Amino acid sequence: MIGIGIWHHNILIILIGLFFDLCNWFLIPMVNPENELEIVNKVVQIEINWIKKRWGIIKIFTLILAILLLIVLSIGLWENNWVLLTGSFILIAILKHLILLKG
Image 1: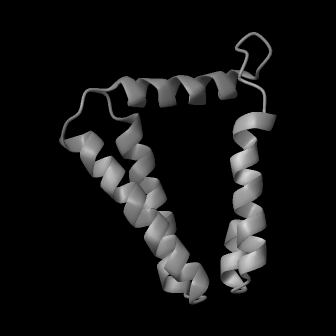
Image 2: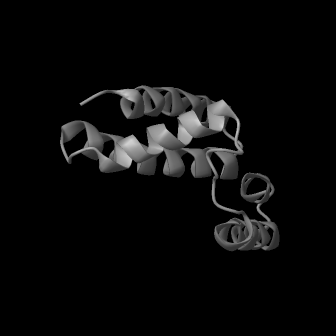
Image 3: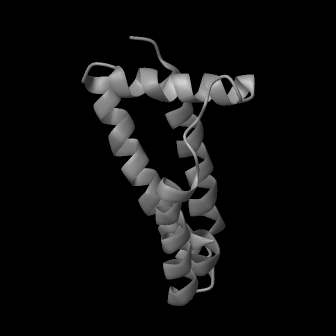
């Protein structure tokens, strides 16, 4: 919803999307490993492992790339620029590999 608002330059849609995103912290129940699909448990475990990973070059680089991704994606949506949007997908692929790195 936020992306659609950015694409159409509609601040109201962006604010509504942000509101719903913030509500997710309170309205969506916690993940219960016994009741979830295996893929959900695997993704949650990967996130936990990444959060617990020691600070190093890879973790700092991952955070910098995540911030860069948000900037490039936002500008690409605002400007309706397919080159920047393609670059965003490339950054997502790089981030996926960095998060899955062991160590």
